[in-house]
Image (cartoon, rainbow, N blue to C red):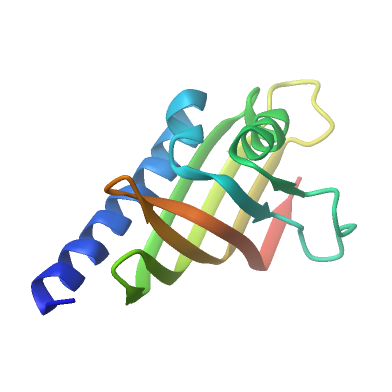
Length: 145
């Protein structure tokens, strides 16, 4: 892989993660599904959460899990300072610092959430497009009301 090809891969993965956040926040579920490999695995287990309740395998199941939690809410997600390593022409890994704010509608079990942490991800390039293969969200701080 040339330096230019590596830089292009890093740039494309950055756009992929931007689409992930935008599609979740705008509730574009088809666009959100399109950022994942069909056999992707995601784990959003919060600190102290029961393992498995917040994880899903397969793009459709990941979308269903996330949609179930945030569809009725206003969400704002930010990804910062990516550390992306391209491991081959078709594989890469990355860590993203993140911050999210969520506001649920009146009458919901929760009112707000403000979280800070990191996304730990792997990526694969399939049919010329980078996709999220694995995702693990770790949180350093969560404030809820």
